[in-house]
Amino acid sequence: MGLNTKRHKRKCHWRSNPRLHVANNIITAAQFNRLSPNSRHPSRTTQPIWLPADDSNMDKKHHIPDFIAQQGFTLIELIVTMAIAAILVTVAVPSFSSIIQNNRISAETNQLIASLQLTRSTAVKQQRNAQICVSTDQATCTGGTNWASGWIVWVDQDNDGALDAAEIIRVQAPLNTASILTSTTQSAFQYSATGIVNNGDILTFCDNRSGETGRQITITATGSVSVGNTTCS
Image (cartoon, rainbow, N blue to C red; front, side, top):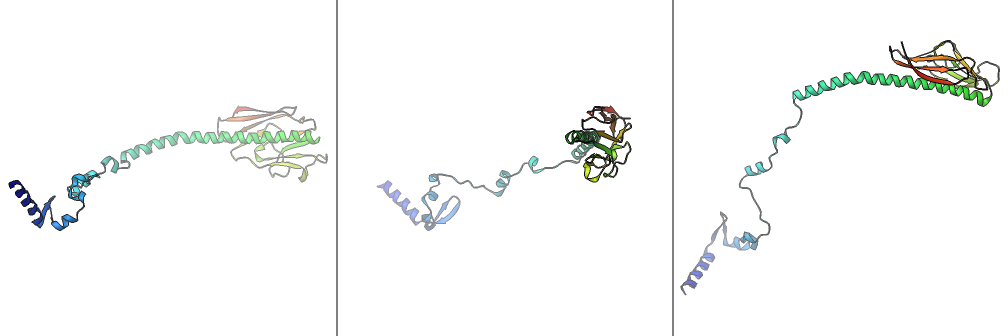
């Protein structure tokens, strides 16, 4: 009886106590009754909720390391990078310029060879004389041995030996101003219906550099064309 009396008094004390101390917070008995079972008994919750004691813990938790927050180059790193870039530019630009000039010589040499082959094939195909000649105005054969000033290819359709405007089949504009393409003696090459040229010759292709590797175009008496390297003066 004594034990039951003590328990009854404790229950009465719980119910009669208008204010309860829970987790350092004071709530009324009515507020406690409105709480969910999980809120009354935190041990029953499936996922505990962690709350920081103060804002300083949050700042430490989300603090960004200095090596990530600090980005960029120092002045010394920037100076070293610029110095390396300047050295690379100094070495690479002259070599790159030389490559461009060599490619230009090759391309313009191929243009002349293609025109020579066109002249020969046209003469054989049409069974008429065909001619390639120096032309500074891209309309007539002007003479001279400077083939860099341009040339024209034409076929003598009426067999009168004179160039007519309708007989022109290809026009080559002047080459690059730095290009030097000269023949030993010939200002024109005429191919017959059999593909034979009237006069063979050697043309030299260089530019305004000194000691560069140029091209030497050889036209034989049979009309064939060959090309090789030569050292320019």
